[in-house]
Length: 576
Image 1 (cartoon, rainbow, N blue to C red):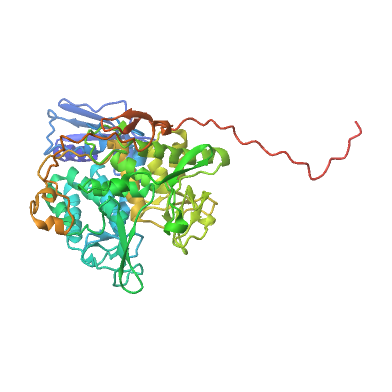
Image 2 (cartoon, rainbow, N blue to C red):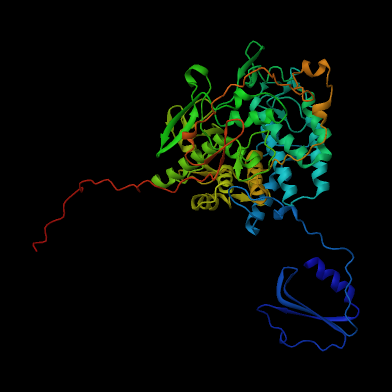
């Protein structure tokens, strides 16, 4: 409105007089209109240069004419028009939520490295991982869709980042190193010193999710995006039986490959590989699977014993909310765009349990709960703030496995993610708990300590990127929109040559012909029908179950009752 008024006033300055009636100010009678034989324009409720007026009257002695050189651009991307209804919250952002989006995006402006296009993972420390860089892409996509930046800004940032990712020095010529210096994109160790530490299949999987989102939403970048993983060798990352492997550099300098991922994160990261055609069926299955009961909720966890497999089985919120926000708990092959039905049904079912256990903890203990791994100020710098781990519920552990109860927190990314995916009174409370934990020009803080020690005074790329994704989800639903049917460089390059085999790239230009004499064996579904407690299962053609009408059941546990104890002392009899 201010631009429109400015243009109008410039056009009429030589021929018109104007009256501004300011609220709560001494002005002529605003009900009396200037005399005019020509034209009259009245605009109500005007804010101009920081002052508020109840109306602006422009009068001209000659007939009033207005000419605007060009229409004011209205950004429709942030309104959600054209997107179907989806689970959780729906609709355009409120003014308060838009301020939150601007604050979250400010982190990526503040910590941007122009020479590489990378963003620091944590504050001013010039280091990042592929996971955190994927969170930056998450923030970048959301910032454009929510009209925080225009296409020119988006393209400049995206093409710079793609160029850097395309030319990263790889870990021993295979795939990206776990850590890079953001100022020069050099391989580094965790102290940000030159060196290399190995590969993370989970980080690479998350990056593959966001590279796919980037090229689906912006086809003009697809050719460039495809050239990023074209350089990577996947032979040691994906096993023949469909499991994912990461690596580390041992003390003797040799590379050790280890199976990577546990229930929650493993299936999410595997979807990234599957979106690019890799067979990761083993990694996408929930088995080995076990359960623990927390506040009457049957919570799933990875059944592999940490004492034997040397890998902790943390139950955390983040893997489930990322799957919901980005993929709608759908299978990678699902291109239906149905935001109300999750084709990966057991993932939606388990996500509801993860949410409900946290709501129940609040209802039974009064502790506001939104658990995820997060950074902390000072040692140990990082904790896995779990729903269940190492045999205990609500177990907060540092990377060495030491118990850190004072570092438990309401994670901002978990709270806003849960709020976007579940529209309940409890997630309204989570929203209010963290919605204002930000600096307008630096981004959101990590979260709020459960023990009353205040907020965690750190800002990170992962936290702010996930918050932006959650806000975008409210407007548009699941962020991956598989719409392009165009030929992809990733699928067509070096087809029918040995070059794809040398790097174990999938042969996407080949169609497997079924054996007409083979009887199809009936395979039982991954999760039995009886395990769908919070979602309505929908039978699919392949014998699996999709999930719809997912909603945590209402609180049905009796409120805790005070324990009866004897008094410390007895009152003197009154003699009555």
